[in-house]
Amino acid sequence: MSVAGSSAKICRRWQVCSGRRNPLLMVMENYMTLADTVLAVNNDLPIRTGAPVHSGKVRSVYWLNEADSARLIAERGYNVSADAPLAIMVISDRISAFDCIWHGEGGLDGVPGKGAALNAISNHWFECFRKQGLADSHILEIPHPLVWIVQKARPLRIEAIARQYITGSMWRSYAKGEREFCGIAIPDGLEKDQKLPELLITPSTKGILRGIPGVPAVDDVNITRDDIENNFRAFNFSKLADVDRYEKLLREGFDLISARLAALDQVFVDTKFEFGYVTDKTGKEKLIYLDEVGTPDSSRIWDGSAWRDGKVVENSMEGFRQVLLNHFPDPDILLNKDRMDERQVLACDNALPTDVLMDVSRTYTGIAEKIIGEPIELADNPKAEIIDVLGREYGLID
Image (cartoon, rainbow, N blue to C red; front, side, top):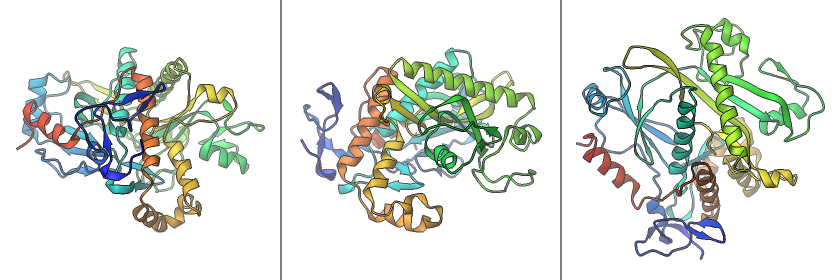
C-alpha cells in the first residue's frame, strides 16, 4: 500500500511483512496521519527552564533552573553533585545531511521513528560501556523514547572519528595522493572500502579555538595527537594523562561496538566520539562519553552479507546522502562548501518523495531493532506524550 504525505495512515506498531518491518501496512484500529508520528519541532515544549533553549540540527536542550535541578537530583537519586545543572534533551525526527534539514511531501517534516531509533541505539551502547567498566555517559534517566535527562558536562573541544575502513572523505583524499591523516602515515596501495591495517583515530577541533600553535582558528579542522598533548588544557583536558584515557575509551568503545555488530552480521566502518567531564556526588571528576555513539547518524554501518559479496549496503545516514546525490541533477551543490547558499535553497524548496523518507525510516528502525533486540514503536502524538510525562512524573511543566 502506498503512502503520500500527511493524509497517509500508519498503524501504531510496525508490522512484519516478508520478514521485514513495514510501517506502511495498516492493521490496527487506532490510525493516525503519518506526519502525526513525527516530532519535527522540538524547541517549543512548555518545559520550565532557567536559560534559553538551545536547538541544534536534531536535538534541543532545555536547561532546567537551579531549583528544579536540585529537586530532581534529590528525588531521583542521581549520582551527581547536589548543585549540578541538569537539562532535558529532546531529540527530533528531523533529518540533516550536507548541513541542511530536509523534508518530505505532504507535510512530512521528518523521518518516522528516527529519533527513537537513534536514542535507543545510543542508550544501548552507553549501557554496554558502563557494564564493561569503560565509562559513564551524560544520561541520567530516560523518561520517554525521545527524551533524556542529562547532567551538564565540560566537553572536550575535540570530535574524534575512529575509522576501520578507508571510505568516504578519507578515500577521496587518499585517491588524490594524500598519505598522512592527522599526523598518521597511511601506506600506499589501499583500495576503496578496504579495511585499514589498524584502527585510525582522526581528531578535529570542536568549535573555533584560538592561540594554539599550528591549529587554524576554524571549526572542524584536523589536528594531531601532538597538537592535543602539547595544548591539552586548550582542548579542555584536566591533565595530560587524560589524553591517554580519552584515546583508550575511544578504542575500547569502538572495539566493543564493532564486535557486537559483527555478531549481528554488520560491519562497523567508522563512528564519531565525544567526551567530557562531570562531577559525581562524592565530588570526584570523571571523564565520560557524550552526545551519541554508534548510531546511523554518527557512524557508517555496512550489511555484512552484502559486503562479503563485494557490495556496500549502507545501514546509516550515508545511504540517504547517496540518494540525495543521485536525486538532484547537480550534486556539486551538495559537495561544494562554497555553494552553501544554493544548498540551503535546494533543501528548502524541494520536498522529497515520501518513499525516500520511509526508506530512511526502515533503515534506522531496522538497524536499531537488530542492535537492541526490541521493536521501535511510533508514538501517536510524541509532543503530547512528552509534555504529559514530564509534567506528571517530573513536575517540569507549568
